[in-house]
Image (cartoon, rainbow, N blue to C red; front, side, top):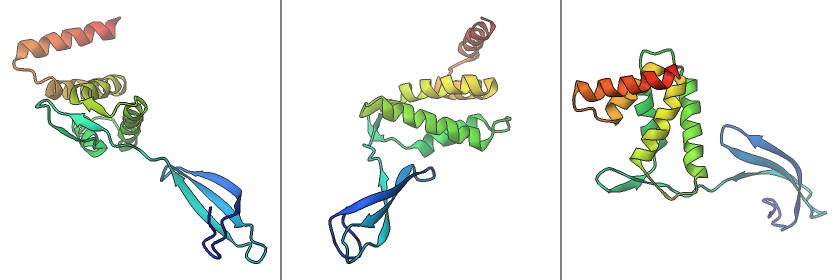
Amino acid sequence: MKCIFCGCKDSKVIDSRYVEESNSIRRRRECLNPECQKRFNTYETVEILPIMVIKNDQSRQEFNSMKMKQGIMRACEKRPVSVAQIDEMVNEIEKQIQNSLKQEITTKEIGEIIMEKLKKLDEVSYIRFASVYRKFTDITHFMEFIKEFENIINK
């Protein structure tokens, strides 16, 4: 790493710390030039490749975790689910999608992941999200979904 004071290309790492807010690593460095020996900080972050979302009409747009968060927040409205729990869920889902190493993912796959997480977090929020996501056309389809959900819970 090049010294920001003298331009020397040699430095040593004195300390490394994980910075949770920015998901990066802060490194404290010292210049190895005997005439300089000044200390400075550098930050390393992981380069994340953009993931494209394939929508139902086959159009593509870049993955946006804020859209996902808004949908989850709508489903959790007036429920005993904290913003911290929603943020944690969004981060878990985003990591799961990033770790899949796919460059494209369908909205259907994202919806299924969200539903799986919501099922564990809050049943009412899960049903709310599913009713919008699955686009129930009438009460019969919705009742079939509820019965299926009851069977899963009662197992």
